[in-house]
Image (cartoon, rainbow, N blue to C red; front, side, top):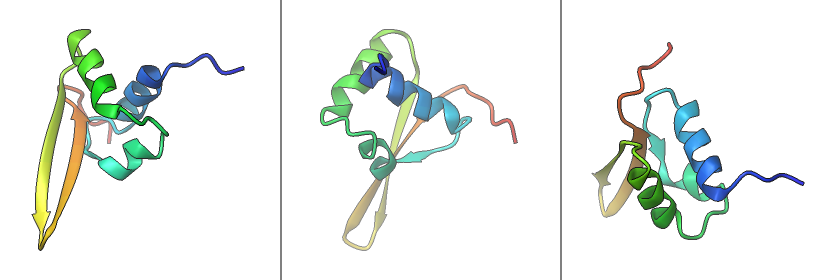
Length: 73
């Protein structure tokens, strides 16, 4: 059985983006209902996670990224 925590899965997703922005729907696809709580935990553990929102018409799009991680490409 897979023993990775929700926090581990979230951090792995952010790391896999190599410093790029990860859209909220991609975070939600991990099945983490309280993703904000997991982000809070990661920040308390010293991870620098940035958030930005973009307005497209009436729709807001939210993105997250792991700060300070240089892109490998």
